[in-house]
Image (cartoon, rainbow, N blue to C red; front, side, top):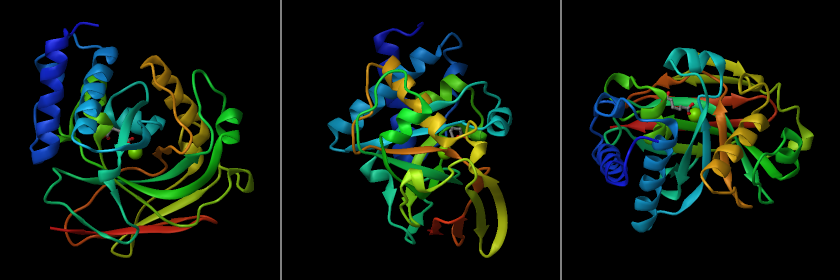
Length: 262
Ligand code: 0L1
Ligand code: MG
């Protein structure tokens, strides 16, 4: 670790202001080149505590940077996690405003909802045993860094670009599906813009949940029963603007969609 407590608090405020006012900022490592991944998670934790103090309930977590192409695209070498609050949730089919976001992109993901606590180093099988159901989801990410350009330390401190999410489709028991082979097609305004299969997510999306529980353990946290986890992008992240209508069809699980407005 290289940042003292005062620097962590200052960086967390800088990120929170950028998130609140949708203003892009320089990546944090420009001013703190020695910042480590552990420092980044300390900034993210300070951000989470600040949201909680303002009454925002944490409802779960997201795994990010979980596919090899995504890591290469963003120039990072490991996945990461971010927290999800109730205020980030949007109803299926709803209108999502883009004026309070900087440069939103949409990803298609499998959401896990847990029925038992997960803690420490857990296996894929333990994740599946603790999963109540899985469900199609859209994640709307929005890096707070200029040009959507960052490094691992900066993006983790920015809560892994978390912004909004939408749950939809049909919730399914995990044992009823082969979670490696869920095909997804994403359309914007009726045109297919991205597709993929769920094995894109660390070989199996439950591996991403296991990774996430390990990161939480390193932060001194567990994943409580009843948590929502976005397990990582099955498709690439596609930029969206006001006027766009997004629909994602998940094989055997139905579809999830949202509209974007100014
Ligand atoms: O959810 C994701 O995989 C995104 C994590 C952060 C990287 C990005 O903003 O593209
Ligand atoms: Mg994502």
